[in-house]
Image (cartoon, rainbow, N blue to C red; front, side):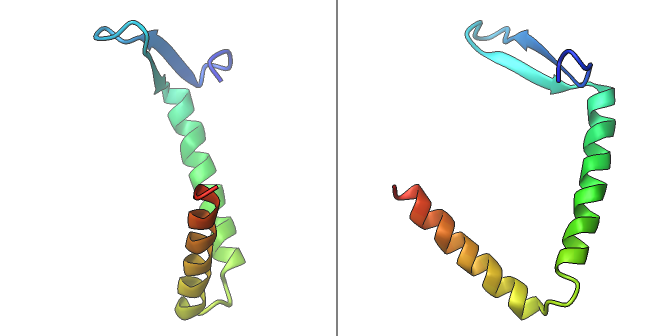
Length: 71
């Protein structure tokens, strides 16, 4: 991503062991496009789900995430 000009890195002035990463303007533009695309995909994926269905799905995914973190 750095070679594509989407982000830049530099050593932290407070701690040289830390590398700070920042999106460039081009990176921010690509991120905006990605957010728009994923937003449309999510809308289509859940188009015929009720709010209650979505809440239930999120609860199940949360439980799965919790179970996997316990490994």
